[in-house]
Amino acid sequence: MDPLEHASIPSLVYLALSSEPTLTGLTALVLGAVFPDLDALAEEHRSYLHSLMPFLPVLLLGLHLGGPFLLFALGWGSHLFLDFFTGVVPVAYPLSRRGWGLSIVVTGPGNFGVELRLIERYPDRKHDYRLEIGGSFALALLAILTAIIRLN
Image 1 (cartoon, one colour):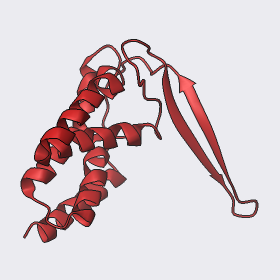
Image 2: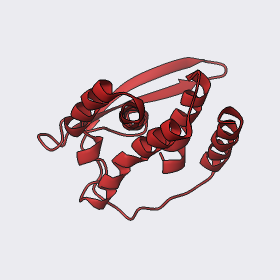
Image 3: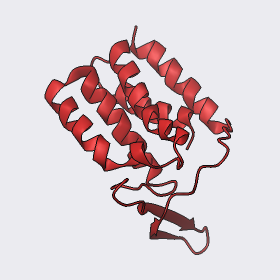
């Protein structure tokens, strides 16, 4: 999942559910949502910042402090949640490199079915980071337009 998707999806949820969204809150949420991808600078992309080890203390601090700190933590959590469906998340990194994810396959239309598979493997080694922006650009535009409308 690319940074535009990671930023747009929680932004749209925040703008839809918050009774009084703020630019500060939206900014903290977006920063938290893209923050875990900084571990792309490490040897493995989904490593340190995709683990629950650093995330849980930040979440507890956010719950204690509230406001933008909580929104940053929720953005980070949304990133981990979304990555769970697009690969594996190593929840105990660096204690264990093993990660888990969920694969959802829908078949149809004649023989409709949904297949859920738990994935257990190690994250892929770092590779050249290539960002392809397609449908996520439209999603980002939708999030920006919604923010303009809701923050006025």
